[in-house]
Image 1 (cartoon, rainbow, N blue to C red):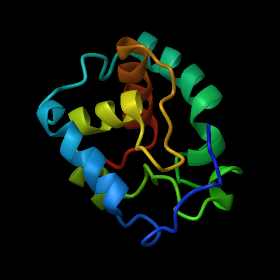
Image 2 (cartoon, rainbow, N blue to C red; image 1 turned 90 degrees about the vertical axis):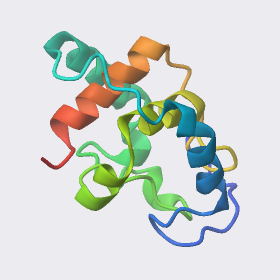
Image 3 (cartoon, one colour; image 1 turned 135 degrees about the vertical axis):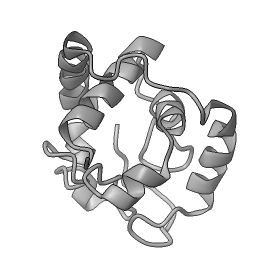
Image 4 (cartoon, one colour; image 1 turned 135 degrees about the horizontal axis):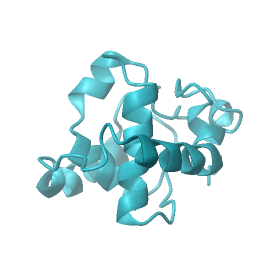
Length: 130
């Protein structure tokens, strides 16, 4: 999923033009709420998909320090960073999981809508700062 053939980043965790464009595209979804939030079965399913499709870049503990992610010029999102987590709506996060961020290593993951919500429920319940 991750690729090192990327344009130069503007800095770790700093939204560059590609990320800004993705956030703009996600605006219509910004107010969506996670229908799977707090659902134990959904979180278990989300964990399985996270481990298979996300951990290699975002890390086992969601800190953006996965083996593949450390080699990228722009580091993957750190889900434990409260300011970043709080600054992005759940609907926007869902849009990004479903669509990726074109031109970056955040690729489309091939998840269904329900699976994307499950992954977000897992991230929210496991890594996101309270």
